[in-house]
Amino acid sequence: MIKTIATRTALLGSNLQNISRFATAVGIEKTLPTKKPDFLIRLGYKLGLINLRYNPANLDMSGKKMLAICAEYPDVGEWSETLNLPDTFHTWYNITLLHIWLLFIRLRSEGSEGHLLREIVVKVLWDDLNSRMRAFKIMRKRHVQILHSKVLMSGSMLAYDEGILRNSDSALAAAIWRNFFYAKDDVTAQELAIVVDYVRKNIQHLMDQTQEDLIGRGELSFLPLGINAPFDPNMARQRIKYSTTWPDWSHQ
Image (cartoon, rainbow, N blue to C red; front, side, top):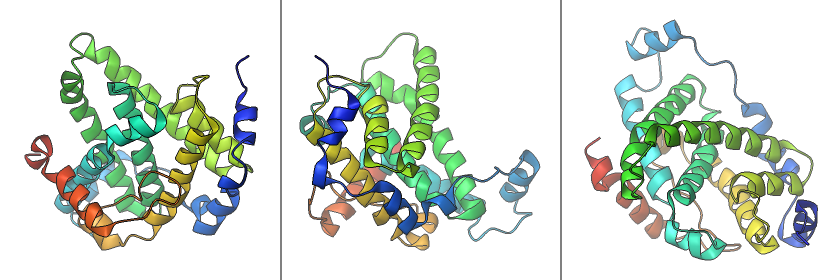
């Protein structure tokens, strides 16, 4: 008999703390999306007619680097091996989406710059998907795949937001099971625990990163996959360098 998600999340036990308390502690409720700037305001930003802490060219560069890091910093091979995931475009995309969502939580506290950076990251993501699909030998109906990817992004981010702001760990675990693991019946409680732990610790990790590193330079790091896995600053710097000098990105 296929286990229910309630049974799976009940098995997480002491590995997880209450996510809603954590969300309150780092102020996620206060950083929920506000109304996006309308077209004229966005144009004013880009033309330099409205003051920003960083100029539009700087933000454009930072946004491109942010997407490169979200796409390349995670070791997809490690994620696939640890979580029993197939080596496919969809696995890469789901891992990338999860990291973009973590980044977007951080950017919600950065006002107008945060809004603009989120738009840049999304635009660069769609521009990048064609080359990604070629790498995974997806040769036909790419426009259909891109449309599906856009729908998946909206649904996943909404589900993750709702999951982390609910009153139980099982809500986030359920969102991850449905959207990251595609509700597969062979996902283990340990695999769910690893991803929930990863989300929890990296929200705090990103909150601790400076505005200058993040907004000014577009550089961010993530804590490693694995419960209690130690953070290696040297390895993080290497991953950032690798991500932002990878051939397709270094010429952006």
